[in-house]
Amino acid sequence: MDVSPAAQSARQPRVISASKRTDIPAFYLPWLARQVEQGWVDVPNPMFRHARDPSKFAIRVSLRPDDVAAIVWWSKNYGVYLRARFLDIFSRYDIQYFHFTINSRRDDLAWLEPDVPAEATVIAQVEKLAQLRNPDMIAWRYDPICFWLDRGQRRSSWDPGFFERTSRTLASLGVRSCYTSLADPYQKFVLRLRAYFPHVELRGPEAEELHELGREMAHIAQAYG
Picture 1: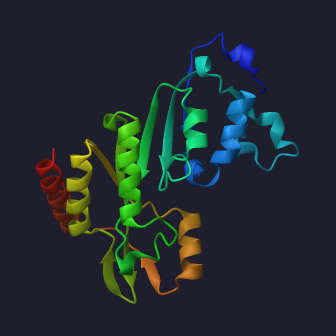
Picture 2: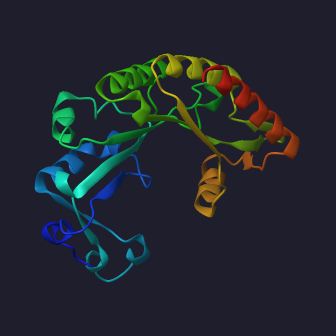
């Protein structure tokens, strides 16, 4: 399917999600900026990635401001986005919503997210985004919460001290939304985990463990609105 920008303009504007598949703001923003200047982007259909000509199944999406209702960003690092050049390019879109994944930087959890910016760096990024945009347009994602066995010992990435500290800091910046989830042990993830961390085995949380985590999380979140 090949939809021209002109054809799309006759339809309702789209919400552009950038992106739940990969971290576009952190790694691919120059590419997206070029597509914005071009005025459109071809989105591959993952169902046909092994087809003889996958481009035949791509969907062309207009990126002209009149055709974009909003951009929803997903990232663990908005450092590139906050550069003057990219702020200028994306300022043409009036409505932008920022999902910002910020998990604990505790030393024993570094193997889960080894290349994310330091805690102070991402808090500074949130502060800058809140100044540039309405803080109501920023959502903190504390996810996914992982549960595993490390050489038989039960472990999890839940860090109440970090959650309390970050809740307090982000609330002071006007950020009021927090989303969380539990890690989904899909097959590709399990296979990679076995290859790189053979001593680690994913597990599901026990009912009482999950109940206590939810109770503690809710208590902290309510304290900061």
